[in-house]
Image (cartoon, rainbow, N blue to C red; front, side):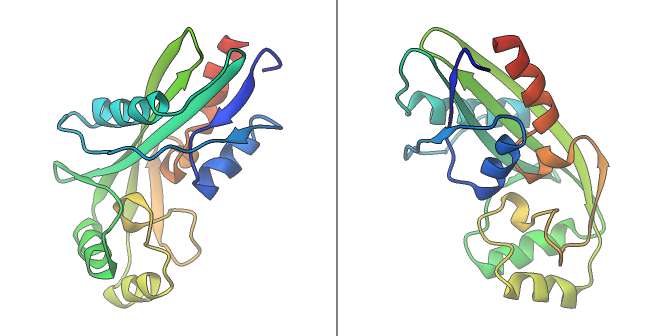
Length: 183
């Protein structure tokens, strides 16, 4: 990736950590965007939102911007970040014992090229109500799509298919493959 300076369009510590496993150096830039979207196809939804973020961040020639969006799709509904602890409990109780699908859309953009891709992973959460309450009380459900982080020690969730890093917020393997084609 010496051809480009990498820019991550995200404040997520999880995305920063995952990208750091792929590229040694990158800059972080942020933009506030309205993430509302009326698309009903989850893959299109996350790619559109990632593209919206990418369009709002300025880049210069020689820079490659990476933006992502993650949602949990469960029972034909999109679960974003919970608005509060009560909403987090509602989300976790609904998903508990069932399979959800996590979609992460990624937009790669330079000044003259744009590329999108999406990865999907299936997860099953298996927790008692007391475990869910404890997880929420620790503050771990906040700021995470579907109200959970599969990597959290107190979360009992199983990756059934797809990429673990995709569930965490950035599909490492697929991104590394795409970046290799941009070199």
